[in-house]
Length: 121
Image (tube, rainbow, N blue to C red):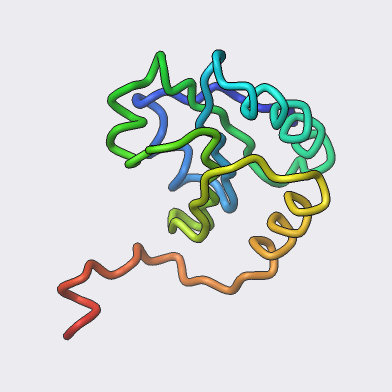
């Protein structure tokens, strides 16, 4: 499956209605983003069971702000609607493949993560 462009309108739905979602926050003027794009695209072709989505931080400034994006590229991985990875920086192909395998192997409940207040209870 090729990568898909993700907008604020579809973000929550995409993240919650798919088993694993990788989200690449990028911008056209960002050199490391452009270097990472072919790696992300190629990986999307070898993992049809994973959703690969890209958020253009210039076009989706409110979404990037809500996601607390401070540096790009930033890669987020969601499993069953839960954020399980969030890190800035482009990954080399082997590291991206390792991250995807870790996400696939991760056991996680379907329920949404606890809020800070609930975790202390």
